[in-house]
Amino acid sequence: MKILMTAFDAFGGESVNPAAMALKKVIPIENVELKKLVLPTVFGDSLEILKKEIQDFCPEVVICLGQAGGRAGITPERIAINILDAPIADNKGQTPLDEAIAPEGPAAYFSSLPIKAMVKTLRNNGIPSSISNTAGTFVCNYLMYGLLQEISKTPQVRGGFVHLPYLPEQVLDKNLPSMSLEDIVKALELLIQSCLNYREDLVFPGGREN
Ligand code: PCA
Image (cartoon, rainbow, N blue to C red):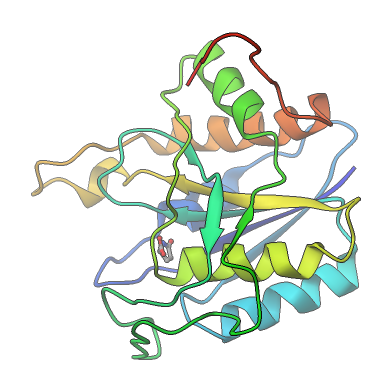
């Protein structure tokens, strides 16, 4: 299976991004051809580069990763919304406010990754994880929306976004949660495994698990 995994570079005054740090160390499992790509944290450029890579590499699964500072666990995103509302400047100084990503596009797209199976797999392996119902209104939500719009033309391609916590070195002077690089790398390998194991997401008839 061909899997494209992307991360972002550091932004917002940080000197590292846990997504880029961890992606570098991921070891692809058997039966997976893994392509890694680090994108700039920039509206416009990030999506253009991603779309080009999708055309060139033709992945069956696209998992985009980013930092969500302050979250304690690995959070697969359920939904991307059609809004740009930058709380801080991107890495080119852009701060779009209250604009649609795609003026003619739908209000939102749902992830087509097996998000519940991912959460269950991570928890079974001792890694804190839960589904997130908002990817924010910054570059990560923008990229997720653009990705899902792009692959909506090709239903055999699955994709979505997963946010990651800070690394310990980023919170030394903050009272915020973090996760070790080793655990984040393990989590990324388990996310890939989940896509291999679950063509369809888990459903929990009659009861919630998340
Ligand atoms: N996180 C930001 C953008 C880049 C990243 O890693 C976000 O959540 O939008």
